[in-house]
Amino acid sequence: MLPKDYDETIDWLFQQFPSYQNIGARAYKPSLENVERLIDQLAISLTTTPYVHVAGTNGKGSTCSMIASVLTEAGYKVGLFTSPHIKDFRERIRINGCMISEHSVVEFVQRIKSIELEISPSFFELTFALAIEYFNKEKCDIAIIETGLGGRLDATNIIHPILTVITNISLEHQNFLGDTREAIAGEKGGIIKPMTPVVFGQFDEEIAPVFSTIVKRCNATFYRAESKQVDYLERNKELAKKSLKVLNGLGFSTNPTDFKRGMLNLKHNTGLQGRLQIISNDPLTIIDAAHNSAGIKLLMEVIFDKYPSSEVKVVYGASSDKDLNEIGKLFPINIQYFLTKFKNERSLNMDQLISFSNSFKLNATFFEEPKEALKSAQKSADDSSVVLVFGSFFLLEDIF
Image 1 (tube, rainbow, N blue to C red):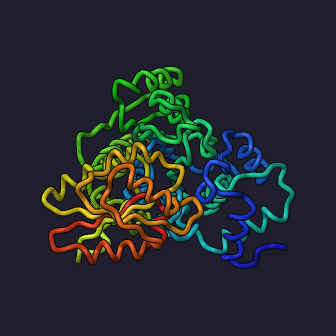
Image 2: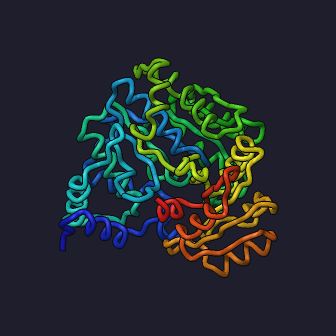
């Protein structure tokens, strides 16, 4: 039976094609064959729309959004594909900030369900195919594409972009990508294409040889946009600025006014949320999507740099596949923690949260619901406090 409305369609998508967002590693398909066959069977063109392709450990979503926002201010029709979503599946696919219509999602899924696919695509592969078809149909001038997991074997790597961007490299998803930064750089660098310029946000001595080898093999021009800024969003801004400068030479012209307006109108132009986002000023409450050790380290550095004399209270919840041994080392023991479960089945359960707290001798209180944890943290705060919420996109979903 074909799904007839949007809610039914999304339920069917998640049930029929398991999502990494929901079930984790079981949904990962390390091959491009599936998505290539899917795109071929659906007769979706990969050459109609020019692409910017972005990979990296952290900062992919914000960098994609910054580039898209500035191009929007310059008058271009800009497609944006990011993941995961926080509240609505359609957040993943936008044009100039506007989410794909419910009708377009339903129509695509009805077509998928009415034909006999030669393969069983993943949720991410289907979503990516929908995005490319939508950007083509709507005649986008350019589309900014964020990788899902990794790079070389990520479903998005079937595109041939006009520009490649790699934000940074840290240890993550080591069961898939390798257990060293060099190995992970090799996987992320797998999106670099022959004769295609690439901008690096990080090019230190540990990973530079890996990237240099790939760049040489591809005969690609490369640029560096490294920044010493403590604020990770400022670093991503420098990377976006360098990327836009390269795009200027590729026919996508922007100017300093476009850049300034793009940063001011970032949320409106892209829907970006959960990046050092202030959700309350009484008390000051900041929410962030940081979820791996590298991202959490950057977040902590920013908060303690910006608010050196403030008492920080942390609301934290995490997925069970995170490296808690590394993350716990980043948690100062002299602040108060409000540890919480969230609705998604990948959430740490109460016993795991208690064990985590005990392992690192945290001053923690435990909650079944994120909103209750936030309420308690805010109630305990005073005028000099900062309430910091982070740990997972799922945590953000339950709070927004």
